[in-house]
Length: 349
Image 1 (cartoon, one colour):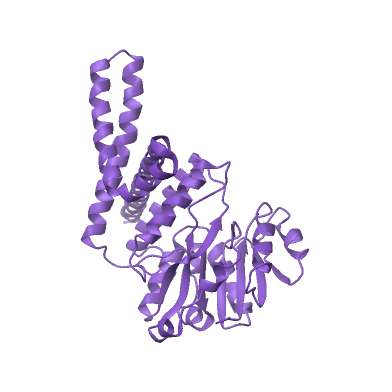
Image 2: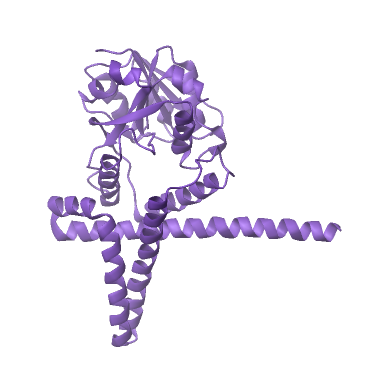
């Protein structure tokens, strides 16, 4: 059944990908009734490129407000019942949109939208981005449906449900995890968003190891702030299986990378006995990470053999180190602020 929908694209300095996305939307078998690009105060040619395409409405913002606020502005300007949110570094295959809306039975059961699934590929010249796309693809496939967590890179939702939960929390700005906080609030209203493997999208983001580390570092900090009620509406307590997985994967990841570093130092100082100890530590921690992510690593092996699987295992370990670093940083920040606050009060007395 064909749906009338508005495509909403938050865009910031997206000149390298925005045209590819817009062309993919225009060429869809069921194209959008309207396309709204919310140019989040870009400093490149994003606005110029978007306005050159017929049927594209560009809303230019004076200040950079972040993707959540940009999505809210787009939704408020949409005229259709259904909304498609898609990031500016993504694109849609021709027939993918046919699977982007709930069935009538789903709607009766308060399913108000469909979350897209990352295609397990990425930019050819960005192996780190290819890893992340593949990892997200299998992460979503492993979730229950409807899922407990959410990705806002590509999803549909009714405008009514979106407005009922007040859209995205604009306090996040450019801080990540605003999508999960949005989904927690949506769930509290009794609504759910399912994912559909047939609703795939292509993520064209170029990503380096530095960018991967930065993203996971910021995401880990935001998760802790949200759990503590310092940022947005908190999700609440974590389940015990989530806590156990976090502890095992995070601790194994940091031991893995530290062990590799000390292996190199030991070899340079000719301490071969120490290097064997660190090698065994690395193998053990890699085994733990591999056991937790074994399905994803099996797929990596099928796609590219042992070399690709090993590379993905190493990148997964880097992500865990980034997460531990982010969590440690936010703990020190909170402790420092609290200590500073107590010290200032003491001086006043």
